[in-house]
Length: 86
Length: 223
Image 1 (cartoon, chains in turn yellow, blue):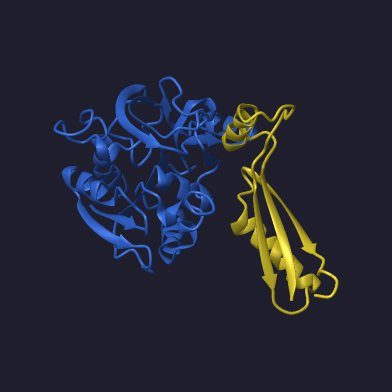
Image 2: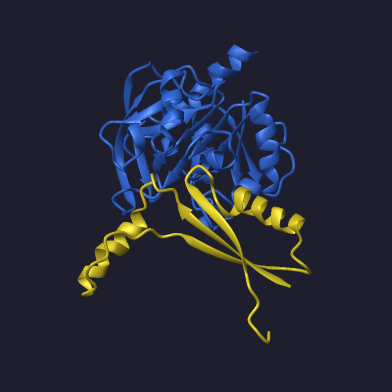
């Protein structure tokens, strides 16, 4: 069993109204000094069996075809290391 | 003509779209997201709403509905396809149209009578208008801001594929784009709702009817 994380973020040049709303809310709560907020999504995938290069390539495909829209979003795939003793 | 209107889980404006097709003199056919064929319709409308609850991204799940394989094939073969609002988002997610729709820049759901200029009247859905005609049609969305990279925007402009442009810019759409078409002119995506502007009794008038009436002309041209 492997746990793979796919992070999806709006491309830098794409306006992120949700991030802007969060940025606007922080000072109202007394949190100062934040100059930029971008809001994205994090997907955690549990993959059956060993994470071979082939399976890993498949996750990239999932990220590109469904989890993200390459027109407006970038994605990054990474494997979570299993915790010691787990 | 037989105009199919697809209902996805979460579609809202399918009944209005069928009604608009009937008012324009067509036979409206209800299609279901799980259908594998298009029941011999001559044109397809993807209606507005919140298919699959807008989960993941607007239109992202609907794109993989069984019926969409048939829609993509038919669109590529030249069948007139109109995506309204959520339907526009589905067409972009399906790669039948370039670009994407993101959250309005003012972050609020907008619901208003919106003035538009019909810039391209050579599509299957806009031939009833004159080029440059100004119309007023309902606009109601939370994620209606059209975005694409500069190269794509320049290409759309150069090829005359901007079908309708907002007068003013109600949602931060790049270059105030309200609707676009594919290269062939049979697939049109439009953020405003022409199906809500077909009768004087309800809505801002009848300016939207032309989108559905255009089909008759398109049929004659291809016959």
